[in-house]
Image 1 (cartoon, chains in turn purple, orange):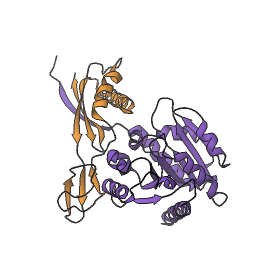
Image 2 (cartoon, rainbow over the protein chains, first blue to last red):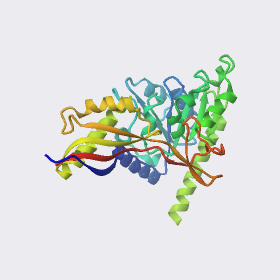
Image 3 (cartoon, one colour):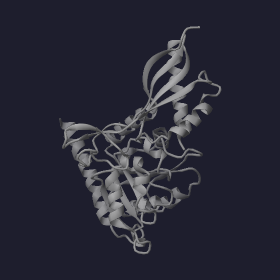
Image 4 (cartoon, rainbow over the protein chains, first blue to last red):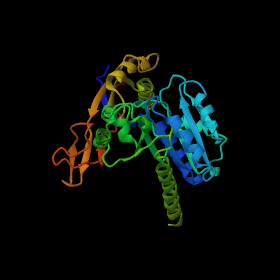
Length: 230
Length: 114
């Protein structure tokens, strides 16, 4: 038998996911829908924030959501109270969403009828960072009860996200949340990251946040318009 | 823990390359970026499981750690990041998010036997 030899292959392991994510991004673009994904650890308040976003942004905007969990349809039921179209993705034992799951869940949906699509990932600060879902904006949430150094413990997910949202701000005082320390942690792993502080429960900071989303949508559409003319 | 599905992806990619070339794989060389979101030990453990009952059974996974390289706008130089907890130039401390390397998750080469 001959000696082993080395052959160069250079294959991206996540190529399949990336290919689907690219096609999703193209599909979203063609439909003019702005897609926002939400990642955080379990219990940071993704569903609560999303419920408020869906409720408050209608009827001005046409919104919908996909929500990922290992099991149960509970979150979809909660979000459906907003009357927006919602679909649960149950992943079974899989700890993150993949582009193919999003693609399957969207079958039968007319994306042209939407301004915003929200994708709530499975509660997990590790695995979702590797998977592109074709989203335009990735939000990472961190509640005031979690500890200000969370970004330093999970730098990859903070690094892969575009915007940070500090949630449950109504509890900040009780838990002696150290805002400068939290900001410093985020700034350290993701320099220049835009950060929102809000309470979905009391509504504090929600208007600023919704204005930000509206601005993102109009900028996105202006870019698309300019590109289609060019 | 998503390393098992990543390991299965590695096995799939390597099997595919091996079949196209008509060779048997004894080792897979993987480039793993510090920002790939994948834990090396968990991946090595999962690899063995993922190889079972495939043409790659018994093969070895050799992982090359790829550190993060950023570009510093002030120094106009590429710099090796000393810690993923601190995205700034190790020389002048200027914050930077211009990542040039470190997200790799790539089957780079195969050790094969004809």
